[in-house]
Image (cartoon, rainbow, N blue to C red):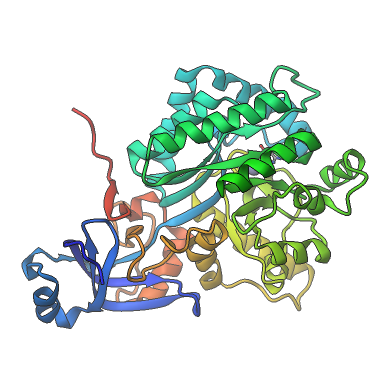
Length: 448
Ligand code: GUN
Ligand code: ZN
């Protein structure tokens, strides 16, 4: 039982995923958040008098949700390039490897300029928070100081974040946008040390080799060691396109597979998240399962860059952890609601190809966007659903928000239908409040 006092109590409908069910609907519940931002209790709304005595709060201070409102867990973006937000929605006319050279590397090189970085990073943190991303797993650029700034901005706005200083020592196209393996190692250590020194409660460093084609074996080795010695998260990309898979075969001829390249450098752990994985073999998925590494499914990006269609059902059948990612700017939308919709689209496209295919349901995809993502990032002890003891990371959704995009034709729809409508049709106008670790972070508190 929580030793801290109760800071806030909310009454109404709570919708979340559990470890057993994709969608659990809790109607007329009372949820108490303690002064540390953790969920202290969940009880029946009818027991408000008994609970207020037991927990020492005033019944009149309870925040009552409206008829068309519910709380759901905040969404987890398991893969987003904060640095690519500046050109999101453009430049999707080339396959991956060309796209990196022509658009991505030239833009990322600009983050040497801290004011440029501050501007874009402020925008991306605000945009994702307002759209319901309470946890984001970010790629920054190779620049340590700008990457530290991203950590500061996430902390200032109250977003839970893993922040990665990108590491790469191979770049044949823009030779000035890379490091030597030793620079990359040294700067990664400096990044980790400086970020941890700040003691931001919700922001952690993540070791970030860009992907095998951008990294020498020496660099991968350094990074595996750093992650191991400091027990840190790891993120990268894997098997996004067939061309990339073939390139890795050429660059690393002595390895069994793309996954083996990471594995043999100690980069596959239960704190590893690898984006895409569209073209992984069964053997590679088995290695994910054995090591506890997870996949960030980025459907907008996979379609926008014509990279592939990840068969999520197959990944889940292999019991590999999987979350959703926007992959801005390979994916053009920074909203996790888009990631939900594109995940459903991809699953339906696979069903068009094979009518026997076991299509994902919106309930399953809701789970992936919330609890699934927190599991994929190994953060589910703290976030992902409404369980006593976890942090209160939540969206207050109003499906009848003034000027909002959802029409409620037959008032009286149940919460499950409201959730489905929100996932398919809703937007940030329906997300009237966002909480991270018990603190209201949206609407933004405007400065003087
Ligand atoms: N693979 C290596 N770098 C990147 C990147 O920035 N975006 C995507 N989508 N794939 C990558
Ligand atoms: Zn990516």
